[in-house]
Length: 433
Image (tube, rainbow, N blue to C red; front, side):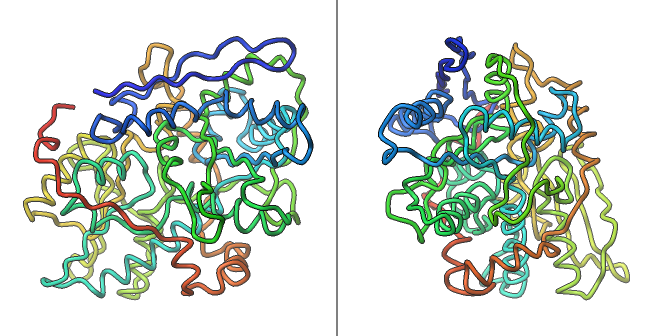
């Protein structure tokens, strides 16, 4: 097993920060076994910590202003319930408190990443419909497997290879889309070059740090990553606890600079970005002209493996599934290899219970899931209003203004990616997890 120690940063405000607790990436936390992380990546990953974040903050205070960076922090929607639970605030007030704290440290802009998930879902919807029409015995492009979870994608690329990778959705994850939004669209609005922006993502899991190492986007300067540093919700919470700062709440910023105090919203999905629910409704309407209001999940072997079907006159038209946690993922892959796969689409997440249970936020000090905290977070998340991505006027404006149309070449290049497809490692599927 490959174990990576992440050293997190020193205190800089009101005296010296005590060294934060070591953050470990273990196989139980993500899927970063020795088949996934190279020595070079391990060295780069050690920079994905609070020390790098504080380095930029200090440079902005000390060095020549021409060398200053514009610090941008983007917060994953699944991190907000954690801060709401920890701070005993509503999710809206927790969002404002987090924004105020980050700005008190020297961060210039704090964004909500929900808009990036809008793009990820909309593009996934279109891709599924396209694949459904293309699917045949000769060209088997279904099932489509989601690619928003970096732990799952890393495992599929580095360990499984073919025949799994051709089934991965080519749409970029919300973090990757946000990188392009910040360092391309936002940078141009601010008349900044991408390398003048230091982009930090606050995320529920450590796998996002791995994802940041591979991020890039075609519209920016070569060699510039969309995300420069990822900090887990737990790492930010430790910094908040140690800071001793008197913090004033501050509104979360928007990419457009025209709105303040935008209401917190989420997508339809239990602890995830909601790809399954939104793709299912879209496919039902586009393919069969069926309007689906309520989605009924049927738990199969366990609560983390659920099925959703669309039936008409006794015939199953669509069969979707959600597979969370590695044991369910492994069973799914084995069925796919054997050709006994009944699903058109599967939402795959590495963490049992979904993104809210990311190991960067839902853990006790001894490394186990904090079940009480997780239940509280799930309740908070469920109470956030759901807004379908199609209803976002800003997203539609961005398609036209930034991407030159919904089906343009620029949209394809910016919002989609390709995956490595090595031959499968013959021993990896039989490992004991």
